[in-house]
Image (cartoon, rainbow, N blue to C red; front, side, top):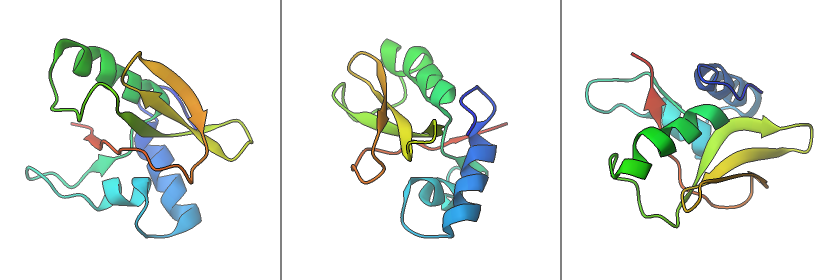
Length: 109
């Protein structure tokens, strides 16, 4: 349920503990092995926004396009929705989890 920087990894573990493994955003990030790293996770709301400001806004990171929206691992209150960020603003909003959005994994080092 955390939104702050540093809470995405715990959020991801909590989601997987509740839902089990499958083909959804948190599990896909957790299963990822890339560049010799296997500690990938779905970013929290604030981690995702930092990706926008530190990477996408200055043309780094190879993000899909400026119209893309990405999932975070942060839930929005008790509504059952989660935070997402549209990279054409940026705009952070709460989104129904059944909506298809892009996923961007991050890892801690």
